[in-house]
Amino acid sequence: MDPTALALLSALLALLTTTYIYLHLLRGPRFPPNAPTLTRETYPLIGSLHFFTRRWEFFQHATARSRTGNFSFYAGQYSVVGVAGEEGRRVFVESKGLAFAEGYAALLGGSPKVKKEGNQLLGEDVAGEAGFSAYFNKRLINMLKGNQLKKGLPLLLQDARASLNKLAAEPTGLTDPFDSIYRMVFQFTMRTVACNEIADDPATLSKCLQYFETIDGTATPFSIMYPWLPLWSKVQRTTAGAKLYMIFKRVVDARNKSGIRGDDALQYLIDQGDDITNMLTFVLGALFAGQLNSGINAAWVLIYLANNRYWLERVREEVLSVADRHCPDSSIPLKDRLMRIPVEAWEGEFPLVDMCLKDSIRLQMSGAAFRRNTTDQDIPLDKAGTEVIPSGAYATYAVGDIHYNPQIYANPDEWDPARYMPDRAEDKKAPYGYMGWGVARHPCLGMRFAKLEMNIILAFFVAYFDTFTLSDAQGRETTRIPPTNRNNHTARKPEERVYLRYKATA
Image (cartoon, rainbow, N blue to C red; front, side):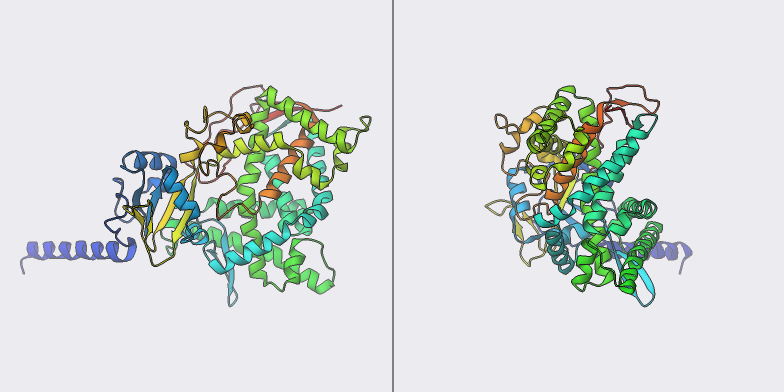
């Protein structure tokens, strides 16, 4: 055969092979005719890369180009339908055919699975396993019941005091809240959903936080799109998961050997006869569910308050009011009076703090929620069924579609807790107008504990420090709040570091 013809034939065969692999192995199923219009941005093998790298911008552009606001796209090998608007949001949160866990398993790439295969430890994504999801929910609900929170409250208060005592003793009077407050929340969460041995040991707690952040930071676009690829990020996740496994295994083994029981969440899991692998996977899932939002938003609330004297004073008045009701002796330092507040008051008597947290979550919760149609039927997106979420396809909703909507929230880019006052009630202007704590079929199971954490942190912070203001690393006062990166999936530390300069109460 002529060499030129042979070269052309070889090139044609290579093209056909590549096309076959892409269409049949790497690309998800074709969308049916009644699926929303396929977005313009799509690349071979990758699909819509900006869904992973510039998510909020991607949603805005795709929604604007769609007649209905809904659109279809490929995220690597996954077929995904993006929904928007009031009706799309209603279907997304109410439909029984859209599975929560299966959606997050594929498109988030969050907490790892740690399992044994012989003597080998492997880290894989587990969020989508329906069986484990049911196990996780059941265990978490039991751990966060009122009597359990009441039992654990004294230790949480002591943790808060210990952390703030260190800040008060710091000669610079300067802290990055996305470090100090973030670590405080990690300790709270570790104590509540894991074990006291780790929560009480600063060195081990720090190691766990390091491994946790490694797992969080290695959920790359390609590791999510093609989880079977042997990427370095997957090796890092596996290693971090294995190290966490060994830390918790040592605690469990020590308890079994000594016969000494703990009085914490880990002991509850042991008493249920849970396997160490399931226990660790539960703890990781609980840490991811809480830390990535509570830890970050607790710091953001302090940032916003430092820049808003009116709301800072109102919060301080609320804290004093609660202390007066439960410990009226004003000769006792406020930080000591707070130790006498019962759990019922911590949970129910800080409405202004709740509003502050609520608007921080609205601003920082800029990512997307995920579901998967696990039924054998297409799910209609409107009453006429002109658009559907195909069977087996994934669905996603950009929370900014409602949280940043100027028709719902006045000046949506501003932090304004007053928007939740009864006379404004902006979050009630539309069905499911606020999604910060989950809605409909999937409310946040950890909301009660997250609010308790925030109330404790903020109350003690204003008790310890007369004043606190924004500053740069040199302690120079500023009014600049770092911008929020709305292309993140969850709340994140700002790309620009910001500090609080504080003055301890005499």
